[in-house]
Image (tube, rainbow, N blue to C red):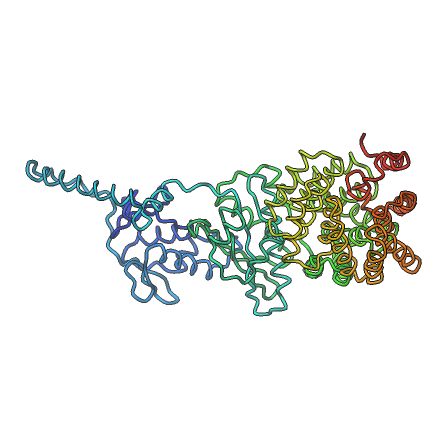
Length: 622
């Protein structure tokens, strides 16, 4: 039997040194980032210098038979990354020669690192020259570092101690299906990947709204990372063909724009949820994050879902994000279709619940009609999957907005955030709950966490402005809401927030202007005209009184939230009418009553015993 030849621990070629034990590649003493698969390919080649290593050899050695990785693309990508690291080219190779459709050959000469030590050099004059040269080189290096010539000092320091990646942004995945009509599917895969990564407590993951603004952008990755406040960027693409779905993803250290890892994953469309969890677990491994047992379970436990149901759900989500009446109607149709196609698909029920909740919360449909349907749908979602963070957060909203069960709502908010620590929706809704409970310190922590996770979400930015009015920080609120309107001029809630801030500062002209804009954006032009006419007749209070009368008359012909009429009477100073309409809002279960204890509109009623009775009927904590 031939004696096996022991492989050297280090292989040297040109200016490179490959450590076969640690899996590290160095050039002139500096580490060169190399993805794991690229390292394994290089190891296979340098262990057989000058010999052809076939693609089949590499498949057998590096790609397990049961893996769901697309081999050809993955190998080609690994070789491409390897050439980038070596500064090599396929056309004029110095290191790796390609034999088309057959394999690769390592063509550079290697030194295994096990050569015997050289004979001792003569001492004397040689050592003196060596010492002088060394001192000169040290002086030169000191000067280069001192003046940071060519960014040398910065690059050396960054290579010496790259900080761990503890914050990520998943940029919108590229659509490689060849069909622009599939954008909803690709965007949905982006959402799902964000959601899976967001379950990892020790990593900050930026939410969907803020990353979607970079869809199709050509901005440099370090610039995007700085704007989002993250260490790492995950980007990639989605393909699907013949009932198969493939995700290709690559992880990049944002500050240096350094590629750390890349891989492709493919599964049957029924296993698409498992595919997403597989990518998330791989990213966690690459950034050296230790998953808790619960996190690991959540990322690996995904039952098959009907492709038709998943398709319908993603189409529903693409309409849900618009939050308009028409889009919500379409979203509901798709969510209903999803649960028909797969009655055990819990997320479809959450989608149904959210549509009905927003319909009732916005005043488009009477709460008495909307909320029972929302409750039934979310109860079914929780029955199917109690580990679904989205279901717990929706349930918490319903418990607070409609049931006024504050302790149960808080338990559900906390459970939802525990299951998905990076849920910007969860942190925001919990912050809104806390401000209504007058727990300002806790509110401050939650709202700032929200804005970290989703810094460019206009909805969160707007209602942060509202909440600043609640805590009487009026100037900050005005600046915040103006910032929102600079990019979203027709955002009705931002106009209402400014109306309230100006009203509390006694700036009646400005308050009236924002009230008129608010009703104009809602297409309540009769109310806007009444406000203008009333102001000309008798000032701010008269304007509010006329507006309230017009809106009350409109409520006899179609649904108008009673709280909206009460607000106008409050600004007019008519306590009796305010309380009459507030009681009507309470009887109909209108959701803005959540803020009854803090909202600016009701300050004139704070000491009125009738108002105190209403607060007690809502079971607010003392």
